[in-house]
Image (cartoon, rainbow, N blue to C red; front, side):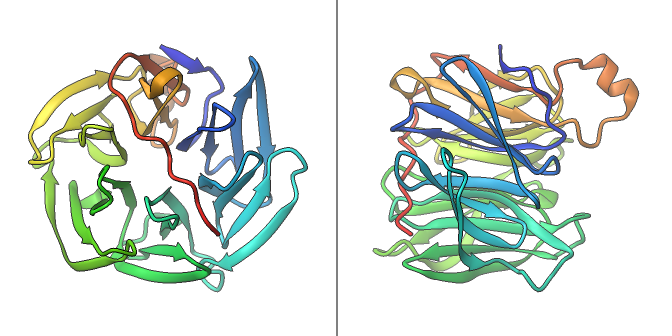
Length: 283
């Protein structure tokens, strides 16, 4: 089912704001953040690419931009840079990101042309930005288990999702291990979110679906999306039981776009599973 029919070239980063009860999402290459409020479409444009966000309070978001992490007031549109993000490297941009259970914010970077190994994953926590993992081509699938003990992430080009244990402050401990291998599946792992029961819901770019996987990596179910390039899921709505998913027009030629008229739109499926509340960022 279509939630919002505004097509995005590269839809990403859906965030259900638990206080505003409102979904925000991004069109990365379109340099805009979108939402709907009381049935009205809203949009904010930025001077550079933006890709992901976490909520700070009712009106304030932490947004990951092309060169920095910044605070943004959705009502006044005032901005405040918190920390630079690879600002000296004009060939990279932010990509997938999510707040963690400890009040921190994880954000991945990647080459603007998906240059091999150009990206990294960082964590912003208590005023510090620290690089966690490097040499990643397309950062994705950043998500956290309900107990706060495990983080997931992916380099989409490997078709694998990794997981890593977290310490009492939310920092990785030990080495990442393989959680999920899509093997010969022609799709690519994109954004992901973990529900309240611990299932990981993974958008599969090129497969028109979001798939749920158990903690042992076994497939539980698929949810079809009316667009080939499903890009990132989020839970929200009444009782957090609505699954939202962004999609993208990117990598589709004119024939593919004609055959898939809903591509790039944002979708919803009700009564799918119960999600976790998105964690608050403490900047």
